[in-house]
Each structure stands twice: as structure tokens, then as C-alpha cells.
Image: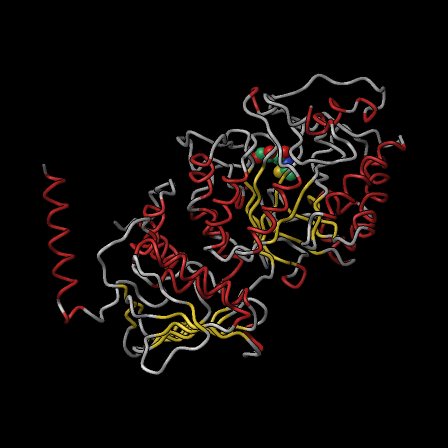
Length: 519
Ligand code: TNX
């Protein structure tokens, strides 16, 4: 009864708001209440009203971004806003322009100007326009993310935002090996991460339990390694065909997200060895494993077939990956001696370059001299790593994913029903309060390409599980990657105001008690 009354009251109130002219220009959102926080925010002047008369103007080169904006605005407003080359004088317009704008905007920045009569978004590239569109969407009331038409005033606060990223690489990682996640789930994740200007999605495609990407020259990798029952505890199974993978690459590119594929080696290869026993030293197939132990499997470092296998996989993976990075794992190779590990990496790291890609691996690769031209992903728990610092002095670049800060599979607190806790508990503030540019001794900001938030899926079976662990922490890591300054009080407020947007989209986020959630 009480809820019905509340709904009725809310309806009356919103109807009153909709018909009261005095309310017409009062925006629901403050300019700058955006995650990640923009570089410069200057509120001024009067707000813009989005109505069914609004048009979106964009040059042909930016048409795809304009169409995506029109699409994003359609469900909640019910408006079919036309995308045109040029708006006629007097028409309320959202105009997109890309060309040679200010140098400081770089490849992904934008300038957003909101006045009574028009919204203008300018950037050097479509990636910048897309980033600006994400900001614009957050400046509209949260109801803009509803799936069905809402009665609302679609007001955008007046003023100007100038914005560009601190780091070029802002990533998320999804583990498809422990539990397979379908292309539809991966697309949904891409939709969500790209709203926070995350521009890379790293897919962990192989591990002891399963192999999740089709490789034509070694077909049993997927027919055996991706068979039903290859998920943790015998759950699920499955794999991406090459067609699935290419479609994901295309879908991600439309959201300015680059796919980064990972094949983990020389450890984490039990599934490959079940499919191809010649990849073990004694030639005997190991039993399939669906438990969550790590560090027990290794490719046979001294056998030539190992390098034929690795080269075939790298060649096929590179051929279907337009992005610059190819991740070769390299973590937890506890069944491999240090000498063997070096032998392996000295052969394999250069192979990645031979197929036109930048080698990317977990920070253990920094032991190998060949890692100088590679990118190392730091996943340690401390703020010192002498091996990595020495590699950095020689040229290695770093992506920061400290496990006790950036791992989205760690529990929030002891009561979290999903996730692991080997790296500790990670509440939102812990995920937010560190600086990727100064975190590691001997790794200066100039060597840091950016940040990545890995989501390992030992305990995560479906999209609900993924969303609960990723959100809101992914937003914290995204802000560290994009925004110039860190401000917990401000982040906490903006994140609390963001909650209703996840609700509108049906994203089951964790309602951290550290945040005052709106709505
Ligand atoms: C460590 S982090 C691993 C993964 C596990 C993860 C679980 C890293 C490079 N290796 O094999 O899935 O912990 O949190």
C-alpha cells in the first residue's frame, strides 16, 4: 500500500514538473557529475532541452558515432532523432565535429559545449566523439537509460567540459577459461565498460580447465579443450569460433574498445595437453582438471613441437586481431624452472613481434631480456618489484593491475557471496585510493601505459555474477586511468549519483555501504 502511494505521488510530482515552465531549465544533473571525472568543467549559461524536435548533425566521417547517440537516446525518450549533415538555422541541435581541434585533446579527448540552443561536441577523432557522447549521456537525467519511454524533461546542464585521458590504456579483463562467457554476455560487458571510457578488453582465452578460442591448425584445442563440462567443477564449457571472435572485435571497435587476446603459457596449459598429449614432456595426456589449483602444468620447454604449437597459435591469433597487443600470459609457471622459463620467453616474446604484435604478459615476463620491447602487467601485492623496475629501466612498459587494488574477483568484504580473497578484500575505496603513476618504486609514470581491472571467473558463472563483482569497482579503476586527479569525496558523490543509471539498465551492481546511493 505504502509503495503504491509512493508511486502515485512520484507520478503526480513528475507530471507537475513536466508541465511547470519554471522547472523547464533546471537540470537534474550538475555539469561535472560524470564518472570518470572530466579534466575541466565550467558550468555557465542556460541548459539545453532535448525534445522531439532536436536533430543530431554530424559530418559523414562521424556518422556512426552520431547514430549510436541517436540509438542511445531512443528507448527512454521515444524520439527518433534524425542524423543530418547540417542542421537548418533555428533547429535545436546536437552537433558533432571531428577534425583538427586543439592538440591537448589528443586522440581520445573532446570539448563539449552546452548552450540553450545547441550542444556541440568537438574532437580530433571519432574515439574522442564517442568519449564525449558517454559524458553527454551522463549529463541527462538517469531515466535516459530506461528501456521504455519515460515522461521526463531531458535537460542537459549548460557550460563547457574539456576532457582527455591521463593514460592511453584503460582496460578490463574477462576470464573465459574458468567459466565460459557467451558472445552475448561479452557484448553486454563491452557496453558497460565503454560507458566509463575503458578502451581495451583483454580476454583470457585459455587455462588449465578449458581452451576457448578456435585454432584451425590444432582443432582438438576446442573440440576437446572447450567441450561441455570444461568449466570449474564441471560446469558449462564452450569456446569462441573465429567468426564469434571477429564479431566481438567488430562490436568492440564500434564502442572504441580494442580486444586483447591472451593465451596463457608456458603454465596454465592443462586443457591444451589433454587435447594434445605431445605437448607434455612424457607424451602422456594428463587428466582433465576442473578444480581451481594453479601452477602445476607446463609446456615442455625442450621439445620443438612446443614452439610449432606456440607459433601456430600466435600466427592465427594475430591474424584475427587488428589491435596492437597479444598477451602470452607467463604467470605462475611454478612447474617450469627459472632457466626453462627464460629459454621459453627468449623464443616466444620475439615471435609475437614477428607476427606484427606487441608482446604483453604478466609481470613475470620481466625476467627475460626479450621483455624490453614488451608490456608487463603488474599483478603483485607490493609496491616494490626489483625485476620489473630493472626491466623498465631497459624499456619495458607497464600496465598496472595490483591484485589487492584492481582485481575485480576479490571479495568486497568477508560477507561477499562470490569471489576469492587471496589478495585481500577490496571495497570501493581500496580500489580507488592508489595512484598508478607512482605506485611502484622505479616505475615512473612515463613507463606506465595505463591500468587494467582483471575479472577472473573461478566463482563467476553468469552475467549477474560478473556485474556484481565488476560494478562499482570497475568505475573506480576507469577513473584512475582517465582522470588527472584523485578525489575520493568527489568520486563517492558522483558514484552514488550514478547508481540509478545501473538500475535503469538492469545492471546488478554491489551496493557498497561506503557510498550514499541515490534513488
Ligand atoms: C592468480 S593473477 C592468477 C589466476 C587466478 C587468479 C585468481 C594471475 C596472473 N594469475 O590464475 O585466476 O589469481 O584471482
